[in-house]
Image (cartoon, rainbow, N blue to C red; front, side):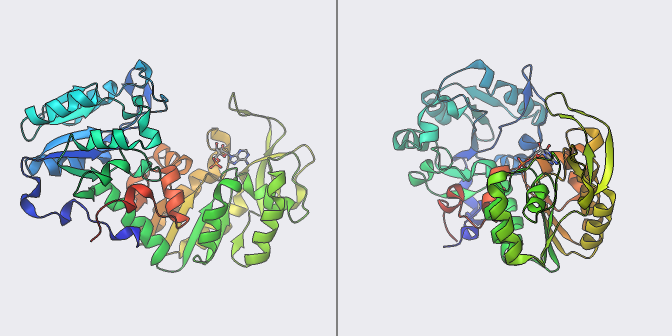
Length: 403
Ligand code: AMP
């Protein structure tokens, strides 16, 4: 059964939602500093689903996790700052906050339609990450309908993302989850060609499955980030003191043997003589050809010739998937490769290409450059989007009702 075949809110008959208690699993795992949400993107992304339910006269129950409190109540991981953000985004809606599931159940009967209840961090319950059936049942009793809109957590089988749907039907996808599934499944099953994947970051190991799955589908795979040095080392090229994964050299070699004509590697890079990631400091930088990396050189970004080469490849692409930065983008001096690739994606999106950015670092880079609106789809899930692109069926999606 394909996971793209699941029902969404729009597949429910019209009167189904009227006056019903609708549990929505959202992903409000947002950055918080000194009790204030510093980036409310994930909260805003959940508004289409919430607003639709309010419009349909539902009682909306929001459940999310925040961070990793490991089954214990701790104020540091409270969702109260999220409540403040939510109130600002929905100034005309009554929003209640409850600490426990018992309280939630009681209140779920008491509130009026068009009101919201936000439950405190679900990971304060030990059973959540264990997908404990008892907890799932207790949660299911708090609602009449289940909506999963937490794409970022869909690759985890937890009580509120998967377990609950065994006990509560209908169980359907919200609009954010639907949007994620539509874009990502288009990329893996029916992409328009030329189809290019860009993979960067440090670890081949974490991305090997996605690379392998994409290699059979894409026309070109562009490599960037530190993983390029493992690929070069695999060809016997000196990479100086650049970061490599010693135990992945053989793997890189076999990938190149499999698909040498498809894999494009950088032709030049930016090297430094020192690198202190903790303090975000680099030494003196120079651009060198790949074959001229000095003995003490640490490669930290792709160079201008590579950018030219990659930009040209991307120019005519019709579908692009990007995951992982081209260099150490957290430092301005070595962020250029990542930033320029982001700009090139924005440019081809304008010309009609479908561009999809997997969550995590590449999504932060897009946001940092304020280009979110100029990319077809920036995924809200890092791990989840990778697993989806690997071709895995995500438990939070496969448990939902089928069309
Ligand atoms: P990953 O978690 O595998 O996607 O890697 C993301 C991290 O890779 C980011 O924190 C980048 O700073 C880092 N990174 C990218 N290129 C390099 C490089 N050439 N050397 C060291 N770290 C890098």
